[in-house]
Image 1 (cartoon, rainbow, N blue to C red):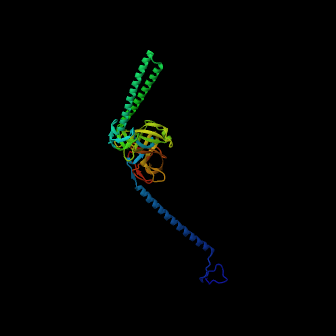
Image 2: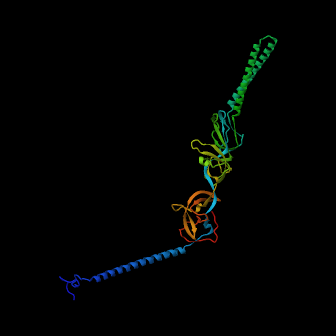
Image 3: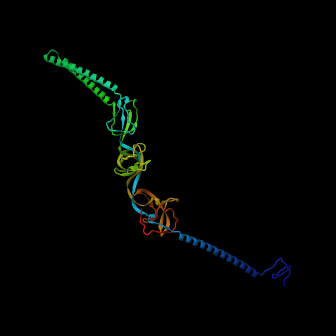
Length: 402
């Protein structure tokens, strides 16, 4: 029987006036259990839906991976191998002619007859110019007249000595007069010798007014002009012989210890694509003051495009060392550390490596690598970047190429 809730009332009374309905304890527990069951069912359904979605996504990704497969050819792969890698030292310096000379004025005077210019070929002994010989010729004539005068004095002293010697023999004069005549003759002869020497010097000066080429070669510089008055040792022309060229390279004291005559080098001349072969021919026994560098001289085969004063640089081979190498083009640097794209179980893997010495072997640049095993297959640089895990189809036969 329902009734309106009032006061007092019992615990099992039910109110139907809309204000409060009292429930028994077992009913409350039953309602709470139902709520918990509903929440658990909802959670399980949500988790199952997420797992199903994740499985579907993974299946799609796996399907995509299975579908994308790279076909590699023999030229797309290279084998990491041990080779004898040439060891070298970087060198640079100026190309110089082994034989070069400056034509200088040996006497002062006006320069005449200089017609050769830069680039003209000259022969050893060829007359290149003259110094005005009038002054030198006049001095030579003066010296020759002095020689004649001195010779006349010698003749007079000789006759005086002969007369004194005869008179002494007859007892007409004392021996003192004979000694005096003898001394006068010696003095006259000495004056004649001095005059003759002076004439020889002036004759040499007259010969020096003619400027001749000391070596055969090409005129590199013209440092004076016709009509200009030049002093002694004034540079007039520079001549270089391009038939023998060498590179003068400065090396540190540590690098010079491994350099020996006969070692070969490959040089590149700045501004040209020409590669030159050079050979060490001399090593300076002394270090340069200040920098303490050691000069090394390398003979270069003459070439039509080479000129005195050009700058060249290259690698001087000092020996070889057996190292594990890879082509430099196969090493990728689009990550913080360099790496190789290797093939393992028909999949691409990115393997970090440390780089070492490098050298050109058979027109290919090889670099020493560590962190990879010998015989590992690597993807060539021409293929491009592949993601790790990308499946690949190998060629029937893969020739190894370091």
